[in-house]
Image 1 (tube, rainbow, N blue to C red):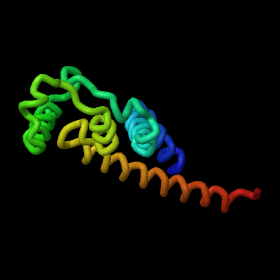
Image 2: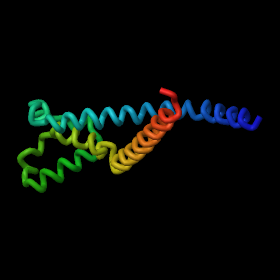
Image 3: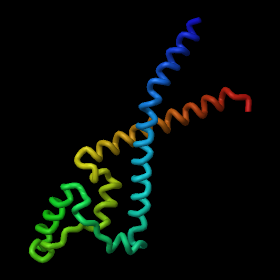
Image 4: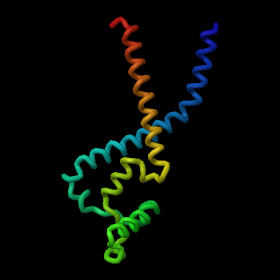
Length: 138
């Protein structure tokens, strides 16, 4: 009798949490795809001419890119030369998407949380695989 009660409790919990977990999982999968694709692009950036020469207008980017562009111009001493140019290299965007800095100051923490979740999922998945495999007859 106690096992059926605990099973009902587990089913209620599962039904309640499934609605949230599928959206969280979807967000995490999208972030993993972004990290994977940008990692591939960073690895092959010398092979792809569009990454080397491409530029992205500041109008479609978050505000912190304008500040970063101004700081870069000041450090290089090119503030007066390229003052009218309002775009940034594609490499900046790819690198920032890969490291999480694109999402602001909390982006890297979001990626750290994603990595921790993936570690938990991977280790519990391996545990479950070997536990089930050990108990099976095949």
